[in-house]
Every structure is written in structure tokens, then in C-alpha cells.
Image 1 (cartoon, rainbow, N blue to C red):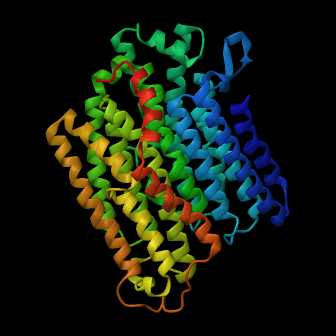
Image 2 (tube, rainbow, N blue to C red):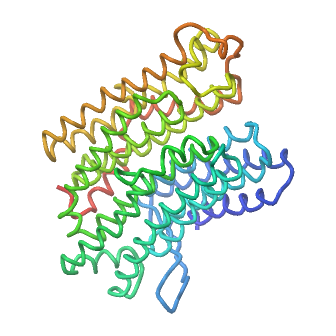
Image 3 (cartoon, rainbow, N blue to C red):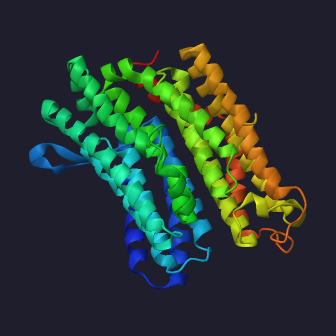
Length: 479
């Protein structure tokens, strides 16, 4: 029941705010719901460590077809649900003070997205997973269309077609498995898929992979990402990079590997090669960017490539590294896009050519920006280092040459991210930055927790690694 409440609270609050017209009431509701969600999740955590089964909720949904509304948490889903609750709360706090029209509707759509994401990560039924997987995109699509930049309609339509098209493959794959199992429970589907003929299992693999590769995205399914990230309003971009992209990697671990084991064993190596190509390609393109949001977008694309490659190595370090990095990247990506929004609001420009010398005028912003950026670089004692070390180790163990190529991304990442910092924070003050003011309380409330999480989970990573280790042990293909 507790998991159901964690899902229903943002859903009901979000629907209310979509129809509410009072900005003051919307902002107050946002803070209260965020605090309530955090408190509820902390309590759920105490229950989880005692008896995870007590958190399951199951009711018949389509009884004639043995489809159930089944929610529950294990180590991986608990980790991702926690990420969703915390990151969504930070995005809500960041958004409520931004200068957007009809702020209540925007905050409501963010809450509905949070509810859908909790549904994705807690779903234990295949069709329920698919339903929430699709639902999560709808409010973000509306956000981008209603508050996005010039030409956003064509960009969001492209994103919507990409992701919906990919998800149709997943739906067909679930239907095929359902016909064999006569139920859509994930645990039962895994039993059936293990005894299917290899040829059919290979088809199941590609059906799932296309959906998850587009959502992440992984190379070469990334065509929708740069424009969608750069033109969408900051709240939508933070949701896309910090949370929605993680649905793809989560789907690989939760759905693809257990439900298409033969296909995974046969084709994972090919997908790893493409993912590493995406890692290097994204890093090189990021170096060439002068638009801050596009630079961060390609950085996010590169990080997702390494996560996808590590997850498909089918090693314990790869699975744990990918799970840990989903959390680490969630915080750093949201922090970087929020800083990009702050810089734009203070200077009126997102071009690196227009900026410089901001550390002289905004030392608080400079310090917090540096912490978040170093977490994304993967500096030791930040959470980015832990995840990248485990993932690179997994890729190196899979194939030494591929691992060496992947390691070069550390250098490339340092180049484009430190260049971003140097071009914005150092150098001479420009006409765009000469009159800026430092950040205040409303920005500190968002950036300080992100910086603390980056450091604390980097120094003490075991609390997160222990959660993912239990899940890794359940995957039969782990080497």
C-alpha cells in the first residue's frame, strides 16, 4: 500500500495543479507534496530493509487476461524510485520560482511525470510497465510544446514519433511473450522466455532493445536528442536528462536481460560496440559546441552510451556501475542544466562566446557549478568516479581494446566540461556578465543538495552499491 501511496500522491496533486489557476497555491502545494514524498520514501526505506515484500501492491486490472496492477520494490527499483522522488522534488523547487506563464499547470505536469516514473520503476507487470513507460512521455511532450523555444513543435513531434515508434516494438514483444505465458507478470514471462527457441528469443531482444535504445538514447538512435534538449524549457530538459533517459537503461536491466536471455547473450557484444561509438562520438561533438545546453546534451548522450555498454557486459561490476551511474548522472545532469538556466537568466545568452568572468561576480555559483561539473567529469571522491570506474572496468574486462577506447572518454569529458567552466567562469568579464549578481536562496536550495549528494555518495558509495548488488545477483547471465 505504501508504494501505491507514493505513486498516487504526485498523480492526484499533479492533476489538481493542472486545473488550478492560483500560482501561490501551486507553489505551496509543490513544496508540501515534495516534502511529503521525501518523508514517505524515507519511511518506505525503513520498511524495505525489514521486509521488502510488505511494500508490494497487487490488484487485478484486466482479470480475464490475467493482467494486474502490480507494484513492488527490489534493490534496483528502490534505488530508481528514490532517485525519482529526490530529483523530482529538486526540479519542482527549481521550477516554482522560474519565470514561466501558467506555473501551476507546469508544476502539475512535473508531478504527473514523477508519478509515471514511479510506476515504471515499481511495475512488476509487463503491460503495466509499458503503460507507464508511455505515460511518462506525455506530460514532458506537453511541457516542451507549451513552454519551449522557437520551432519546438517540430522538434517535439520528432521526439514523440521516435519514442512511440520504438515503444510499439516493445508492446508487440510483450504480446508475443504473453501469448506463450498467458500472463503478463514479469516473473512468469522470464520463466517462459528462458525456454523459447533461440531464433524467437533473438527477435524478442531486438523488440525490447529498440524501445530502450531510443529512450536512453543509445547510438545510433539519438537523432531526437540535441534539439529536444536545447529547445525544451529547462524543467522538461531536466526531466529528460535526469530521469526519463534512465528508463532506457533500467529497461535493459529489468526487462531486456531477463526476458530475452538468449538474444542478450548473442547480440550484447554488437550493441556494446555501438554504445562505445556513441560514447566517443558524443564526446567529440560536445567539444565542438558553443551552445551550453547542446554541449550538456551531447555530454548526457555520451554518458548514456557508457551506461548501456556496461549494463550489457553482463558482469556484476557492469550492472552495479550502470545502476550507480544512473543515480550519479541524474544529479549531475539536473545540476548542469539548472546552472545553464541560471546563466541564461543572468546574462541573456547561452553562447560560450558571449560569456566569461562570472566567478568574479558570482563566487557561490562558481563553487557549486565546479562541484557539479567535477562530478560529471568523474573526479575521485565524487559519485561520478565510482560509477565510471566500475563501468570502465566492466568494458575493459569484456574486451581490452574496447576498454582502452572507452577510457579515452575521461580525457574527452574533461576537455569539454572544463572548457565549459573556463569559458563561463574565468577570463575577462564581457558586456553580458559585467552586471550579474550572485545566486540567492532559491538557487542554493536546489544546488547545495545536489552538490552534497555528489560528494557524500562519492565518499560513501556502499549504501547505493549494496542495493544494486542484490539485483545483480538475480540475473542469471551475470559473469
